[in-house]
Length: 308
Image (cartoon, rainbow, N blue to C red; front, side, top):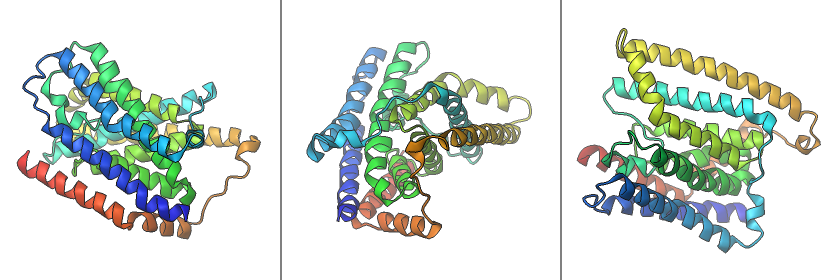
């Protein structure tokens, strides 16, 4: 019964979040003509669109619900693993953005609201703005929703099914069809971070570093890569970097699993069969309420591509 309620209710909750996000597009930007105004606007909107619905959802679920969300602090020995996963996320973003750039589809943003109104004012010379409005607040608000609430709600279907659904839901929040694969892969990486550390705050840290690096590091790195031989050379180097960091991520995961093998708290974990994962994933992705989210995403994404 709980599974069926989750299939019906969670996508409707997410649809409400998506509609709030779309409403931000109707906000006139003529008055947002200074960094201070944009700073305030983005933080308030991030809290209204993501944090407030999450708070209300937890409130409706009851006082004990928050305890089911993995809000534990992560252990210091997980730091190398987090660094490897952050590098993997950034290199995946560099690779996919290189491919998008090569076929003329622009690039992906690292925050949902950023994909709507972030481009109104330049970020250069505004480090406090970047750290708070583009880094910390989106990381906290969006990770609590997608890697906290959504991942926890669907964990009853198995972790792989929950990771896939939460990643799809996360990608939907950007309404960017060409960049869907990037956001989906990012969601999977962040979900895996929560799985391996038992902490949403670990995903928040990875997301925060990725957001800030996407402003200060990635544009400079892209310009450096594209100079010698053009876009194809940059894409080749992006592929090479991705596989290097993938190797480091797998190595750190291996070490983490070895340490977890001696931890009694992980002894009861069981991997579901591939058939179970496929059945559960298909089950949650074919719920009528989720199909409504899918329809909304496709419609809005196409309109954004056509209208601009």
